[in-house]
Length: 458
Image (cartoon, rainbow, N blue to C red; front, side, top):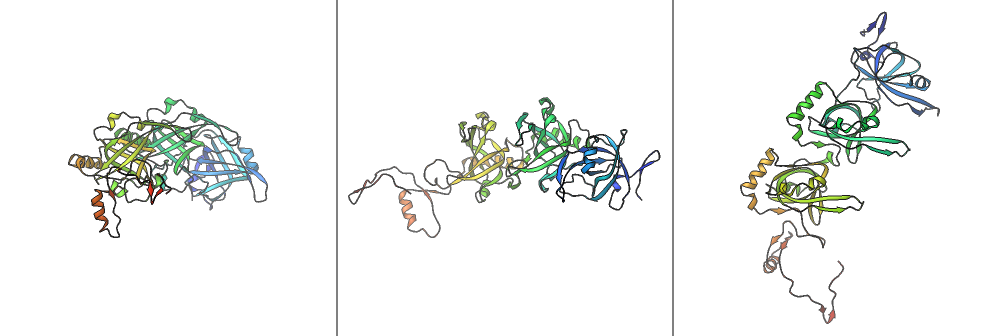
């Protein structure tokens, strides 16, 4: 028999025991979430109203409940999030995981027989019930889905106001949070939550969010705090203390994987340049190498009218290969001194594509650039460079210069014209490529007495 909570002579059925096997019950619970009232069309074509709540009782269990039709119209203005009520007269069914955000196996539907009465606040019932999911685990869930998360704010964007497609005036703010799985995600806050003062979000505070709707966006996963959700800026849960300790000890300098970035789910991870030379393009990788050269900052206007700033650097690693990587914005604007002296860098989130007959990389916005990383891979590359890598012959994955259909191949052999002619007499089925520096000595302008053009279509 299920245990009951009692108030005087009234007995209350624990939410933890709710199932299809119990038809008559009265529960006493706090409304921890209340959704918006929506319209729906029934099977008979008639329209009606519906809204959802989440109910939490003294047993610590939470269940989702829906109010339909006339009952929804009656109770929507009476039920308030955060208050306690007694509820009875609902039917129980298996939870629909497509819409249900609770962990309970069942859900409740209140219709014409519903009875809801407000009661005095029950201190023993928590105000908010969190069921936390770490950010790394969010990568493996089928979208869209809802989750409760706890993390540290690593960056915050200004408030943005705009008009939606249906004419509503909206206000939002995007924050990026990370947790001790070294994973981060972008979360959108709306309305009054977004309008809070900037200083509340500064200083890397740890926060807890209940009711984050996670969806696909631009190839990554981004979250949005639902209106009925909860935001705690000063949490005291064990999960929050754990994240605080991680951030202060090592998290602030950890390379994070941002699951909101494009290609984040397809990123290959850390890879040496020789292995990268054989990968199918495009691909996204992490790289660790020595800066062997860099170019000055270059500012320009994109086709869309955006003002952009970039800098190209060339890195080499202990596979004796090099590649050009473009960094953008504030990363490109960093002082030249940081790039001088062949520092080792760790670049996380590099999108590699074919360019001018070779391979070049571009650091994604959500990626990171770390100078002199104190990692085993960084130490290995530094040791290689110091022990002779700086004087070693290094192959090039990237080709410089424009014009023509290809630049010189990365595996081209230096030769004279005589050596190339001699090699041509013994060449087999394998293609051989030569790099021959020479001076233009003669331009033929006639052939069999006819004038020849100085250019042709190819």
